[in-house]
Amino acid sequence: MQPDIQASSNGQSLVPVHTNGHEVSRKLSTSNHEALQPRERLTVSVVIPTLNEAGNIGPVLRQLHSFEDIVLVDGFSEDGTVEIALGVRPDLTIVQRRPRGKGDALRAGFAVATGDVIVIMDADGSMDPGEVPVFLSVIELGFDLVKGSRLACGGGSHDLTTVRWLGNAALCKVANTLFRTYWTDLCYGYLAFRRS
Image: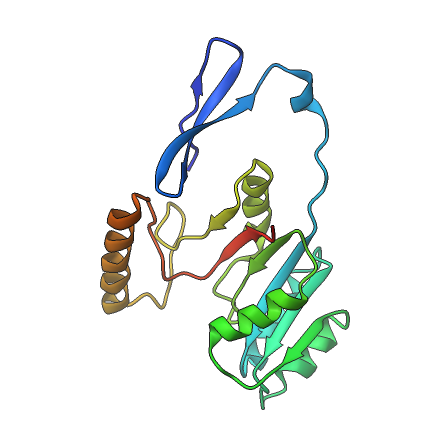
């Protein structure tokens, strides 16, 4: 989905941006020389929490060949997940810790990640690694957070049951009302955000 871009008289475009529940306009220069300068390349860390994902982790990691910093946070899997992961990507950073929930695993991964941008991805193959460059292009425009949605145009999910869909819709309605945002899928954990 492309943002609505409104041209102004001084050769710049204004893009509506929602920040802390308030809509603001961000200027995108279309005529000055600064816009043509190459930007500093952002480094990326991909953080993947795992627990017994031996059947999925290999294909997921094979699709992440262009990323140098991949952090696997494993809850002491008993099915060979870590060994398979290291067989595909010997350069992985492995953090093993007792399972205390996905949030705890993610915080542990963030602590050792080295990239300017952190991407969160599940190990089950439900998130398309091919979308990471799209997330990064939005971050490079100046956004701090990019969130995937299974309900956006072109999205989908085989495991989004009616009950889960209704719960997600209710949660989004509450959050969007409280914070004046436009989330479509708060329960989907595919994100990219600036470390800063």
